[in-house]
Length: 235
Image 1 (cartoon, helix red, strand yellow):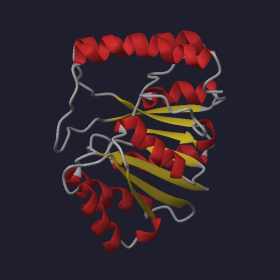
Image 2 (cartoon, one colour; image 1 turned 60 degrees about the vertical axis):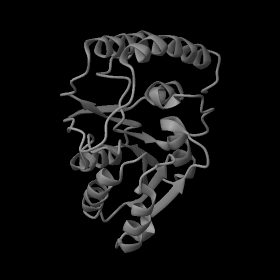
Image 3 (cartoon, one colour; image 1 turned 120 degrees about the vertical axis):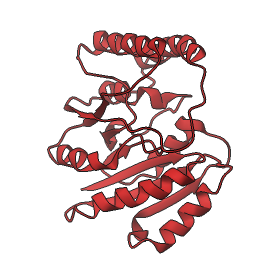
């Protein structure tokens, strides 16, 4: 079995310098699996890309890395699209590169992958978000719980493993990365495992979004996604 990590980044040099050794530390423990680490640079303006080049060149796991740089700004969806398309593994593990997703949970993902789960979700339990965003996410989860008749702790998480067949050949509309779990379920994923993960503080950098705009536009976007899904765009 082969597992592909997909790690999109933008101006994350300081975080990548800590994250990549931690990922290597975990995968070195696994002797019976193949791995690849797909790093996708979404046009960083710092030295993230050159750092990755140097890190890979010096790494004892050099052969496991693939490094890509987008030609045009892709944002989260575009960067993940490149990583997914280039992945050759049976499973894809997505995680943020800002160190909020802790690599110490990788063994638990791998254990559940070995058990044959279609989706393995790391559920963030200590996330402190503005009330309006928390409420929006609860509505998001409730809607998909009604659609799929399946109760999950969350239908949206960045630290998730997917059997590749359920996230393959996607149409890749803008912000589809927010709907990977519903997309995978819609494409036939049934065996889903959830486990709790602690959310680390961001090591460096900061998020850039307006929470009110995010919720307002998110409602419209969600309705558009459901229409696309119901009309077979993700089948």
